Image (cartoon, rainbow, N blue to C red; front, side, top):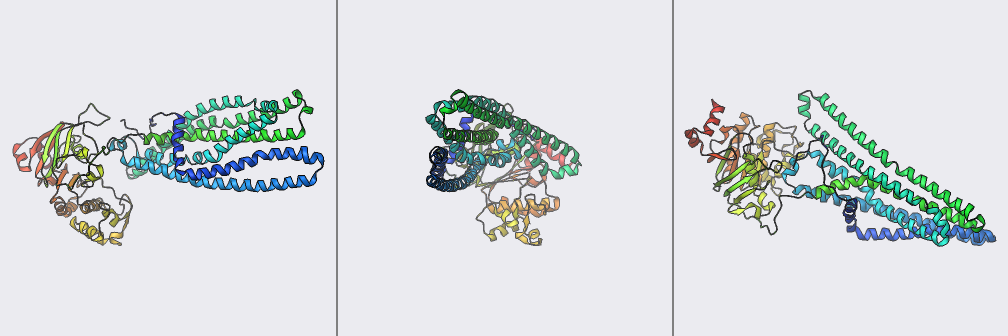
Length: 591
């Protein structure tokens, strides 16, 4: 899987528009009762609209011609009542479908979000977060009018066109044919415009995604931008992306706006042919005035929904690319998932075994990060992983958590292959701490409790005390109820790290992984937290990745990782006496 940057157009799988629409409309099937009610209301309103021209014909050729004023009044009263029912029905169907379409959007967004949650890390490594947000928010919102209008506009307008055509043919075949002669021209014009507009709207969606991704990335790194005085460079990139976005929109709109002129031209041509053929060819004396008025009304009733349909088609062309992008994510396979019949992992003792494990990332399959790695870790043992950057230390711990799938061999916990158990039961017993610990917007208490949501307030405090975080928390004005942002802007880096330790402590994991977890803590804070770390490690299997070798001297064993495997293994004293790779690393830091 290649990496997509914020300034690169995304690649996506291609699917037919028909398939996309069918998948989209399946979400409406969950609301069959509401849609059926709307259909029933529409049947009534369409019937009323169909009989209106016939009532005009009857009024002119019947009551007016005979001078039957009472009959004309009765017909007018009936027409007024029908008009009231028509307005009420139209309002009701629009209200119901607005509610349904919003609920469908919620369903789609929840479905998409749930699917994104189970995708493996390689999916997130391959694209900016902003591009995922663009699909989850902007692309889903773009479907609202399509879903609503599919029922409230598409179906009634199509039914109106069919009914009007049938009535006109029944009333006078020749006049009907005259009125419909311009329809083939409309069909050809729409096909040409749609085929060109769809491709341009796809490009526009991609440019929107690029802009969204860059803004998200830019704001996330605003401290770096300001510290390097790179505001002008950042603005230049932003302006370039905005210009690309604007140009893509104009290119799409210029083509899409061709729908309306095509409809207006063919509508005018159809009206002209009706009167020209009706008067000059058939002869005005052959057609009654009431019939001409009825046909005039019917041709307006025919072309008005045609215009609505083309507007809907234009809207569909504009937004179907959003549906394609959504389904592209939904069709992305979750490479790491629960296998069929996966068992729940029992409470772990903490034994870890790598059996001839090999691994390569999917975007670089030819470069083996790990090659035939085997080792055994006893329950409660602390293992330190050291070695140069990119040697595979983090890969090892990610395979234990099954964030990535082994290429060959197996990772076993208490003798059970991690691929044979559910992800939830596996990861609930493992906890990983990194150097960049994320804090959520909320209170300090909520952030610590995130490690185990059912933890009591007492357990939260105990965890904070254990890692020496309680002291600085109580110095804050609101203590554990202090509100912090996701970046912890009111906290120092060391304080944020201590909160992350407390969050891990309250989770009580069977296996603990510390991935450079103390690299951003200053020496003073490190001394404060050292006792907490020892308490955290006590009684549980632990893996510690550290470049600062002073932090892992007490580890039971140290693995020196390089060249795709374990070069050396032993405790600190043994490896120093060996005077190999570990000795050279240690000497480079302290000599």
